[in-house]
Image 1 (cartoon, one colour):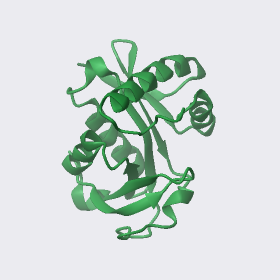
Image 2 (cartoon, helix red, strand yellow):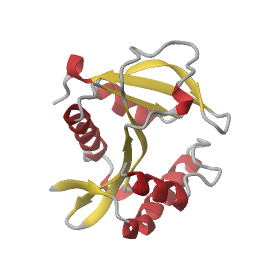
Image 3 (cartoon, helix red, strand yellow):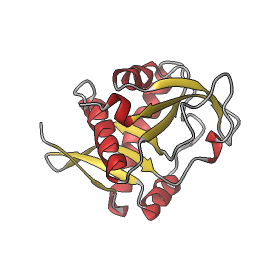
Length: 175
């Protein structure tokens, strides 16, 4: 399988929303209330594109993955509860990682994380933070496999709690 990453184009938003709809249905079918309130909207992805933070993964010319990697900071990460961040050094943030259901189980999300590690190192940023829903066990397992440490809990602007994770890249240099 030949997976390549590139910056998201405005023309990709429709396909991204198809992937999001599939993820929302998957969460709903498992009783997880993540992304059940209309988030993320096309406008969220359009803003990611405008900021240059949105990426897609393509396999044989088809978008099979989307994710955001931002180095702009994350306001909701300023306060962490029931724990602490590993450090206060500059960090990248991974958000809105979605894989085509037909491609799950093939390691694509891990490939995106490795892409994020490489992009972070290229920018001399040695930390990545991410948050996920407490019931999103597949994401939690993915993060554990790639060396992320659970750090505590953050609260989104919506008031929802999320489990917070951080990776110090050089310490764990994922392959």
